[in-house]
Length: 450
Image (tube, rainbow, N blue to C red; front, side, top):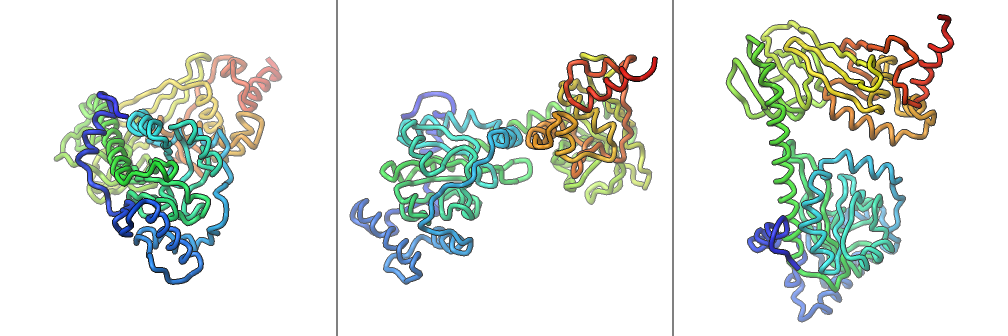
């Protein structure tokens, strides 16, 4: 089942050292003589709970609490498990927007191949319980289709009752759900083990990793394996974060050399990359609405924040001088080489733009008051229904240009000075673009008297 190298070998080593969590299914809890008797006790406990009657066999506490939540949510134990699937472009948007994408090779190497060999499947969801990826045994994948355990499906407790994915989300802890421990009868032939994956930068829940299969494939140590792999994924995310901080440090060093006063550079989560003129700190807590310009931070006092690629330059002023929030130059003068330059008091940085991002930023620069997703869909595609595509592109550009764009509506931050450099002949504006907002500008130039 296991190979002798790579992620799977490391996981095997860690797995041997793991013990099964208290939230796993423990056959000894029911003191049965064999597996069929165990299943019988579970079904009796489930039936008593559905009827609201006391039973001779009570479920484990984690399952009992989940059953009670399912009742409050109004889940029918005799219902199916079908749900309205996300559209493929929405699934793709959520995949590209989550840090879990960075560890999918690890998850697939450590769990996907194991699940395939043991007649199970691996499932990875987002924090809402929506399935983003799955892999494993082809036959079990076909059986999973029949219960709507497929990409885009909803598996929270609110929609599907007690199941490993939804219950792990609710408990924020590893959990295994076996046979009739599922609240919906349709799932009584399945066993699932799931564990949460957290972002090591801020502790935020990223999603759930799950192994599911027919109850005949049940093994009480499955949960320990899944929990170990989730921790391995978190370790890899921590390594990815450290590499990002190192890249930010390389950019920050020449900027800090030009400053006289105390200053520091942090990533978007406040983790320190570089510092000058003051003692180092591990992390600066940043508010959710943090942006460029004058600010006050409890750990530093008054500061001036300037955006950088992947983080922030924080100049500690000690006074109320707001400083310069920064200037943005959107350079579309060279038709085939659009780029953006950001200037602050400590220097400047620039980044090349893809054609789509150049179109987006051009529209936002023209409409400083902001645009909704539907308006941008019309600006870019002439179709107000293309909002999912617009949001996906904006998510990407906002990750690249930290601190420059706001949302609700989408716009450049009000404190920034934004200038657009157009080609000498406006008819050359992004010549390959078919976006209505861009082609409209070119058409107006064509119609203007020479």
